[in-house]
Every structure is written in C-alpha cells, then in structure tokens.
Image (cartoon, rainbow, N blue to C red; front, side, top):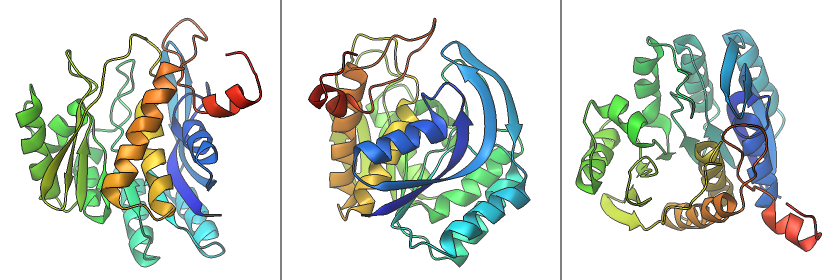
Length: 266
C-alpha cells in the first residue's frame, strides 16, 4: 500500500484539515499519516480559535515519520507561521520528499484568517518545493498580487505562480460565479478542467480534500494531469453527496462509495 503524509492543521468538526485529508486518503486506498501544525476550534459555523503547534514539535513529528517510513507523497495544508514553514521546507528538502502537493491555506470558508501576515512571504518561498500547488482564486491573488476575474486571469496567475518555482499549478475556480472550471498549468501548457456548479452550501473542506486526493493519486503512480483529473472527479462526487450537519457549511461526502456499498443512509 502506498503511504501519504499530510502536514496540516486539525479541524475539530472533522470536515477539513487533517481529518478531511485522512478520510480522503483512506477512501482512495492509500495509507495516510499526519503531522499536526495547529489545533483549531471550529465547526460548520466557522473557526473560533487557533493554537499553533511549536516548530520544534512539528520538526519532531516529521523526523519521526521519515526516519521510519518510506513516504510516497506529501500534502501540505494549513501552516500559519513563518518559522514552521521554514522547518517544513528544510526537512522535506533534507529527506528528498517526492510528490509534494502544496495547498496554500490562507483563509477559512467563514473568512477567518489562517495565515499570519509575516508568513505570506514564507509560503511564497516554499512554493519552489511543490510538485503541484493548488490555490483557489483568493489565494492565487495573494500569491501573485493579480486581480482574477476570468479564466484568462487564472491562466496569468498560474504562470506567475510557476515563476515562484512550482512545477505544476492548479488554480481552482470555485469562487467564480458562473462556473466551477479549474485550470492546470502542466508541462508549461494550460489544461482546462470543466466543472459544474452544484447547488449545495456544504463545501467545507473541499480544498483540503482535492489536494489530498492529488497526493494520493501521485503516490499511486499517476502522472500529474491524470491525478488532478481523477481528483476533480472525486471532489465533484463528494460535493454532490455532501452532508447537512450542524447549522452552517457542512462537509463533503468523502466515503460516499463506502456508504452506498454498506447501505448506510446519508
């Protein structure tokens, strides 16, 4: 079985972060492991509080994993401070980590800032180790200082992010009003991944989920373009079968195929 490591924050409601990552990895048939960078108090209504794990403990977690287990892919999610970002970059370079997927988490669905202002530069400096980076439109705007209003702007931002050192860039279009098309800059060519807008408010953890799916497919040996395409299919089905739990934005259906086979109502 292929082994995938997620380095990200914890979501107490289970819809995003480490919890969403491990659910996705399990659903896609890889063995998931975690390095926790922060503990959040959050639910479907929003993020109430965040406590960072110290850079020293993050380093200890990463070394524990890499000193013992061969890692086939790494997903990086929420990392809120510059010291921890520097530690992650140093260690993944030291251990020659492969198939690195960077999800530059900056703002939660509810608008809570998950990245300290001084960490924006550190995130940009970490882009160079990524095999795939997966910003949404607001994150791409922060990374490039470009205003993104249409697909052409998304393409421009992808090329500008590639200049930061990323091998491949997926700019997600879910924040656009009319469609949910994503664009992938792969081998210096633009691939448009068509999407349709699904009528649901339950999209908590979509970014965590698709980046973890990409890491899982890369670990299984798929090329980047195919890994991204399959991940797009997976997240679309998960959104179609999302859950209305709590009073706000519910989670997507990571295990929908398992539930169907087990005849579990959802």
